[in-house]
Length: 332
Image 1: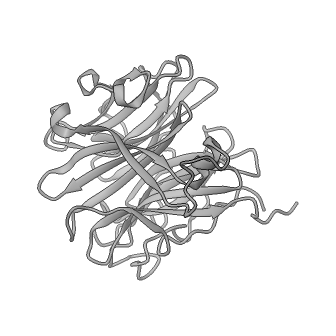
Image 2: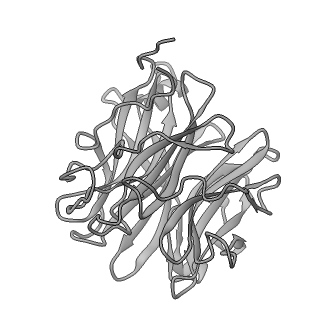
Image 3: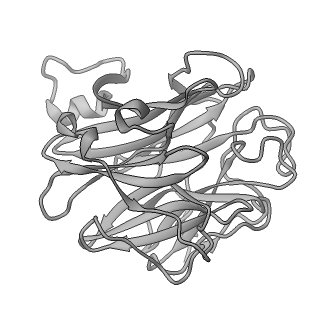
């Protein structure tokens, strides 16, 4: 067996950040983890019922492995392996002149080496577009005043309603921007590509992960990573079903695979891969089973998984778990 995603339990995961309030609509998460210039950054969205998505904070992220990489036994190593989160840049919906901001996406320009930030914004009345801030040499130099739309809904297509929640990677100098596109019924996972990170073209195969099976209401790609043991990509996606309680935001994580980032095969038709410990059954969940916006920090023999996960009170927190990937069973 090859390209199997690691087994993980977010019930046992470490809570990195908690929302300011309790109850439904209090969320912190939508994580994006990204290495730039030798530093690991974790970008997070904060939300509450009154202000919706009001702030994106980018933290410098570190744990014991980062200390070991920087110095072998020197001062500053963390013997307990605890995580450090140092805020380096904050961008608010007010800074952008919008009603709400959602999942951030950091990427490094493959040509200049500068860092770039993509943000989905609601300009009012559920009018979502994806904006990009001008590239900067470092994260703390990212400037909200430079934000401009790089992707907007297109009439007559499966993303005619909204575009939001980007996940961006570069391969061979080309940008791959996965996003959630709504057609007036629900959101589905879409892909657009670019050679310069400014002008994006939708691929012909959209939606790349359509609504089906247990996620027959909603899908969106949360992150795409190379499989550790095969020439394939693991395409983690969020999904919910028509029968799910709170189906718009009560999303769990599945996985598809792709060998070329053109064709995508759903490998989780029978149920999600990861869910919150509050889940009561695999389909038609009536509790908050949310485990969404998964992102992966590849540390070689293990991965760190970050996700926004539901708590018993209905709020969502940011959790992290570390899982081995070197021991995945393989057979010819």
